[in-house]
Length: 427
Image 1 (cartoon, rainbow, N blue to C red):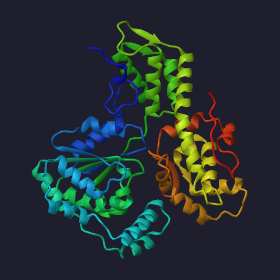
Image 2 (image 1 turned 30 degrees about the vertical axis):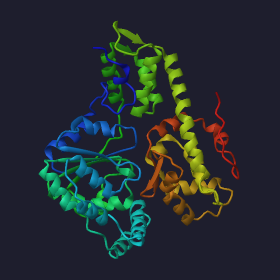
Image 3 (image 1 turned 120 degrees about the horizontal axis):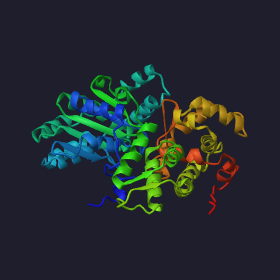
Image 4 (image 1 turned 180 degrees about the horizontal axis):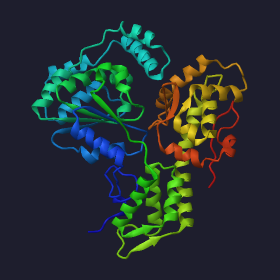
């Protein structure tokens, strides 16, 4: 049977034939599935293989429910989908209970949102947070009834993919339900960006030692070499060491970019399916052409997103979003990988801003609204997220953009402000 190139290399929702186990990450995940009864959180930037890691060991079996937390989904929607997919008949009364118990008074919700945002971003002291949280009267959810219904159906795993799209208040409410689900023997596998080790314990300390975290971000050079080797074996070809090393370096070791470069290189070399005769592909010149074309293709999309963010709020006089984007585009890769600290951004804005009187409060306000601004401008997936007083890149492909972006052209991309931002891309 012929093996198609699309089943071997590229970006796909299926587990590709070139997929390789990352010794520490895959084994750790498998151990947590088989040797513990804990909830599991798989986190990392977009396009690093979080969902494929989950699919490798937990599939859509009879005992597993998979929910995609798409934009606009709330906790009531999630519980309703879980019950529906498990085959539970939902009476009108039960449906109303789910909706009622997942709703909060608008003023309480607004206060809770601000409280949670301060907790996640690190902009309030623990004492202030505890004092504020004690004033809030939160609803009791229907998680007990949901758990009982699922146990009757033999459900063991509930997968929540793209968890970061769930709003902060619903994430908080779910954190308290997770303890009850744990006690009921139901396990959640939560997949998303904007999560770090200990994230849910910030909301509910009783989840300590009941929930485990796996950072799926890192792919070593050896891992990437193994992807090439396994994929080439499927296609009855080889890609030379020089070309492979070039793609590893050019991709900034971002697995999705690396996979796409391998796909493009094979296609441009005439390999669309398993070769009848063994072939070695070794044109470094073609590899460079594939990378240049891929960068041109994706950079237009990402630099447009940067344009939209830099434009910020039209009425804002300080144009802080513009200056932040200018700093991001001109910073070194190692700084970007660690996240842009508040102090780093403040010092650099103070250095380049025409007004030298920028205060901490103005910058804090702008950073706290980074997620909302991207939502408002329909930037999905989001490129950045702000928490623990750092602006992080949440879309891994943007590291690739930063690697190849010509910093000398920064004024062409972000021209001096009081302007209508507009990009001119060269052919």
